Image 1: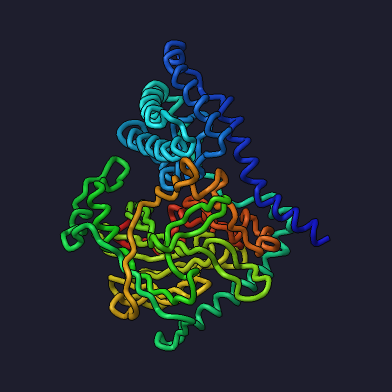
Image 2: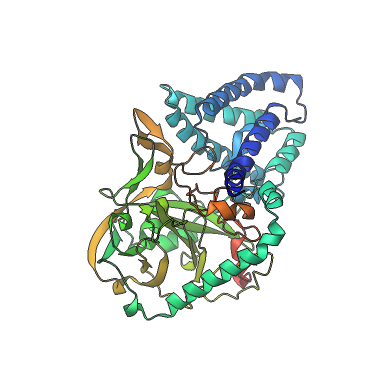
Length: 494
């Protein structure tokens, strides 16, 4: 009986991804798009054929990128939850054009990684052709009002929950037990946060990892954000230099309890056997710049991802142990460039914490059918901040002023998150993440019972945009209205 359950659990973990991929392929091939006049359709055929052939090559090689959602019938566009949230708000005109430009840029970002991992000798030429064909098809096809309406209806990002697993796992019957485990975990975290900082134990030396800065962060990056022009969607238009200054200004200090090599941050890599690991000789923290929404405001976000080689077993048959581990720390900035809210998860999507940086009115949240997030610390100091990280589990134990972090100081390097999509591998490159958005080889034993929650491969490391963060109910780390789920909209965002 138990072995049958294990097989079912593992199979269900991939069921949603497999079905979604097959469905997308079918819909892309015969999407029943509104018809175009014959001249326009004829002009679009060469680029349509190019994308069809290219996507076939990418799929056959297994190098598809799962970070953005493909849009059935529109192979030159991809979406994330942020842009998808505008689908029913953009009318014809500048707002629609800005929205489509964003969808095209996301497709090109994904294709850049796919083409490099494909190992195509003409990857640069194929990317240039993708950009040109995407622009041409957008101009040809989206001149049609019917096509514009059709696109608005199709742009959505599927959630990362498998309803089949919840049905077969008798999810309603499992929820009381899931809630019990969540309450116990929250209580344990609160007890740890209630301890005086000086009493926190460490099995080895405390290492203080500080960012190696390359930009002048003392200048008016906040003023540059406040003065930045907005496009027709209200999105601040920040150049790469301003983004970099903001990233370096808000990069945290990582104050890590170091009991072994598994507590040393590093750059993920693939070994010659195709197993994931981390190179501690290259201490890297990856960053990602993005946006979220609060009321009528569009707010910049800065995310920092640190990786460790493993979560080592703390006991025999530890169900939470496995290859690769890490922490994601996100900073949401207000329109004036000041931190508004911090939150964090592990790269599995687990252990979500919130830390408000400004006074915000909390919303009632949680309940029997929706897992609450945890607010473990009443107040956080002003930046710069240090994050106290526990040995082995890599749990976030405290957020303190950077000056409080004492220990041997070392530097880490900031690199764009996109570097994870083209890691060196054999003669070419390979993404850290598979076409299903998961990191192969990072499965955890907890999946054998948590599959009933509908999260594919619970505990495994996963790609940005694929972080389901609740076992009870539904929630994603990149939910575009995640702030409104926790806080009342302040006056300045109404």
